[in-house]
Amino acid sequence: MTETATMNKPIKASEINPKFKYELSKVHGNKKILQCFQCGTYTSDCPIAKFSDNYRPRQIIRMAQLGLKERVLRSETLWLCASCFTCTDRCPQDIEVAIIIRVLRNLAAEQGIVPLVFKEQTLSILKSGYAYKIPELRKKKE
Ligand code: SF4
Image 1 (tube, helix red, strand yellow):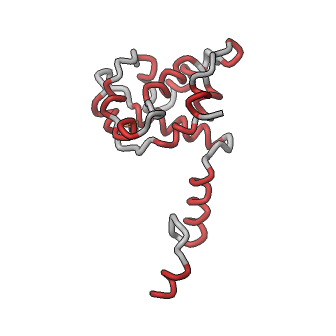
Image 2 (cartoon, rainbow, N blue to C red; image 1 turned 60 degrees about the vertical axis):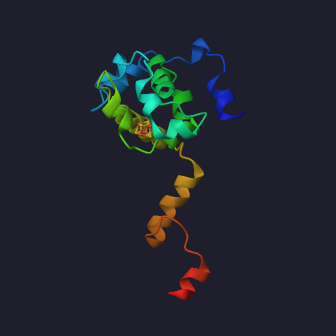
């Protein structure tokens, strides 16, 4: 199933964790998550949302508010955020959107839900100090 199809799937009552938003709001930087009223300001200014039809940070925040914990933690779009903090600067409610997204990523990572590309980058950094594998030809030139 594609990311869009997953995101637009009808919501089942059994998916909803009503405590999730309160748990999130207790984490430092997430206090204002309940104040997002979906005006769309931070989404319209997000540089990634301008280039991706799937990435809408307000959708991530809404899923978290609704308690769709598994759905939001399994969302591939969670990993598209560039952590530029434009949303945090623009939000009229002073919601620290980028911080909330980071916390959601950390929760996903705790459950082992990390896209393969980031796992490979991490292993590469641990092994060689480089985020990407250096091609053999390039090494020979040095
Ligand atoms: S921090 Fe992430 S969600 Fe916020 S504007 Fe930048 S890319 Fe978009």
